[in-house]
Each structure stands twice: as C-alpha cells, then as structure tokens.
Length: 483
Image 1 (cartoon, helix red, strand yellow):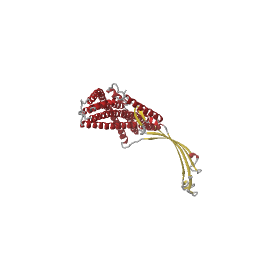
Image 2 (cartoon, helix red, strand yellow; image 1 turned 120 degrees about the vertical axis):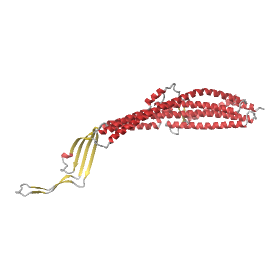
Image 3 (cartoon, helix red, strand yellow; image 1 turned 180 degrees about the vertical axis):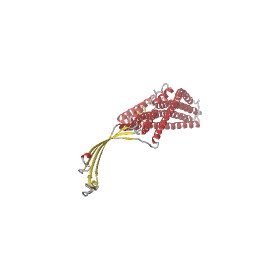
Image 4 (cartoon, helix red, strand yellow; image 1 turned 180 degrees about the horizontal axis):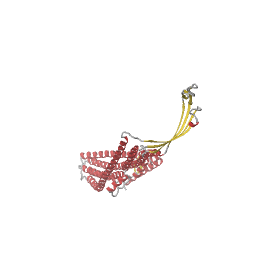
C-alpha cells in the first residue's frame, strides 16, 4: 500500500509525465479534432471571420473613418463655410424682380373741379365750366420692376462681418482636428483598458489553475491521512480557489466591456465581435523634456488655437460695433414696366416705361448711447476670451507637468516590478516544492501565489499607466503621437 504522500507525488508526476501510449492516443485524437475544425471553418466563412483582430493602428484608422463624431465636426465646417460665403455675398449687388397684377373694384378717376371764367368783364357774361370726371386708370393693371441695391460704404461693417465668418471657418477646422485627437485618445484609452484587463484576466486564470491544483493536492493529503494538513488547510485551499475563480470571471467581464467600448469608439456595429491583435503596449518615448512638451502644446493644442482665433473674431466684432458711428451709403436703381387696360389717363407711353437711379445715405445722430455700449460689450468679450486663452494655456501646462511626473513614476515602477517578478517567481517555485514535501503549510503556498499575482498585476498596471499617460500627453500636445 502507498502512503498519502506517495499518492500525492504519483498524482503530481502523473499530471506532468504521461505514458507514451496515452500521449500518442491523445495527440491522435487532438489532430483529428483539429482537422475537422479547420474543414468546418473553411466551409463556414461566418465562423471563420466571426471575430476580427485589430492592432492599435488599425483600430485608430477604423475609428477615424467611421466614428460619427468626426462626421458631426465636419458638418460644422460645412456650416461655417456656408456662413462665410453668405458674408462675402455682400460684395455683390442685390437684384430682385417684382411682378404685380392688380384689379380694382372700379375705374380710378380724377375729378376736375367746376370753374368760372370772366372772359370780358362787364361786356360778356362769365363762362361756367362744370366739374369734369377724368379716367386715370382702368380696373386691371400689371406692373413689373427690376431693382438693384448695392452698398457703397458701410463704415467697415461689411469687412468685419466677413472677417468674423472667415475666422469661424478656421475655428471649425480646429474643432475637426480636436475631434480627431479625441477619437484617437478614446481608442487608445479603451484599447489599453482591454489589454490591461486581458492581462489581469490571464493572471487570474493562472492563479485559479494553481489554486485548483493546490486544492486537489490538499484534498489528497487530507484524504490520505497526512499529518501535514488539516481541515483548516483544506478549507483555505478551497476558499482561495473560489475567490480566484470569481476574480477571473469579473476581470473577463471587464475585458469584454472594454472591447465593447472600443468597438463603439471605432464606429462598428454593436453586433460585431472584435479582439486585440497585439499583446504589448507601444514602445514608450526614449526621453521627454518638459519645456519642449509645453512649448509644443502652446503652438499646436487645438483648443488653445481656437481661443486665439476667438480673440481675433471679437476684435472684428468691435469693428462691427464701431461701424455704426459712420454713415451707410447705398446705390439704388430700378427699371419699371407699367400696363393698364385704359388707353389714356396715366396709362401713356411715358409712364409705361421708366428707370430710376438714386444714392441714399443713413447716419445715426442719436441713439441714447446704444452704439457706445455695443462697442464696450464687444471689447469686454474680447478681453474675456483672451483671459480664457491664458487660463487654458496655464492649465494645459499644468496637466502636462502632472502627466510628465506620473509617466516618470510609472516608468520607474515598471523597472522595479520587472525585477520583482523574477524574485516572486523564484519564491513561488520554492514554495511549491516545499509544499509537496510538507515543509510549509497551506497558507504559505497561498501567500506565495497571491504575492506573485500581486507583483505581476502591479507590473501590468504600471505598464498600462505609462502608455495611457503618454497618450494623454500626446492629446494635449495636439498630436496623435509624441515626436
């Protein structure tokens, strides 16, 4: 009869070294199953292409093509461009064609009053002329006119409106750039989150398997009557396995949630299934200089550029308000065609065809200080935008400095934990061997597994944080990558 320790050793060795015949049978069965699966997958393209892999670059390219935020921002440019062309249209004259047909209830007449004439006073009696009704217009009248108006001088209002509209196009263009950067940033955030949760889920799966083996070994020791384990050791091993398995399920769900968020950001349909096409984060930048990063953000950050353009737009707004101090001069011209059913009266050839040319001026003499306050309000808004630009510039520099510090800390944590991983692995290996010989208790092997998992999880977190902080810095710089 074999002792309990011998049974455990036989079970452990049996899991690692199988008889040649059993191994051959297993490989033969697996080969057959693999052949059937490949044949079925080749005949079923839906199954073969059910899940598509994306590298980070492919995910970014897909998002920039399909994400709806980009389409929305591009529509803003189209709107701004249309408004700019509206403003430019004031450089052209306005032509309008008018046509009217009028039917009166009765003929329009002019009553010539009665008059008395003394032709030869004292010699001949006066001549009495009775009142006379003269037809002026018949009942039906048609009138056509072609009118033109053209502003000759507006005091600078026209040019200021055009400048504001032009700057609006530039601001909308910067918004498209900012939206593209935001899409890239979101893709990187969710891609890194998916990569991080996948690493943690894999780590949780490994420790679940380790605790499953530990539980089975402890069960075998306990069933065999070994004095090295007791009921408490068995319960601890079972509890450790249960907690590890629950942690794995939670992390696997978080990984799927991160993939779903990534798919949405990429603009894919909700039914599409994706997976990560890479196992590693992008290589970090070799060296970062804080002054250079802040200087680059001052020049290329789209939000800072938008506020700088807004300051210029409000300067043009000040000019628009000031233009009301000056007169407005316009040219007006028209050609008229007049037809009436009456032959005579006002319906004569001289009245039927006519043209007019006029120059008009308008100057506001008094408005109770309205124009003055409009100018003051425009100046105040310009000063406000300038202060907002300065505040954004300072806050952006502070954010970059904060991320610069966090990136450096994450980089150091990566270097430290990479060394700690080797130590924790050695500690775990020694603890496993010691446990198999009964040299250590169950809690020690659980502790060694948890310590190894904690070190590896810290390495994954530090690597993720380093990549994420670099992506956030690139976003603030107004660039997809840090050059």
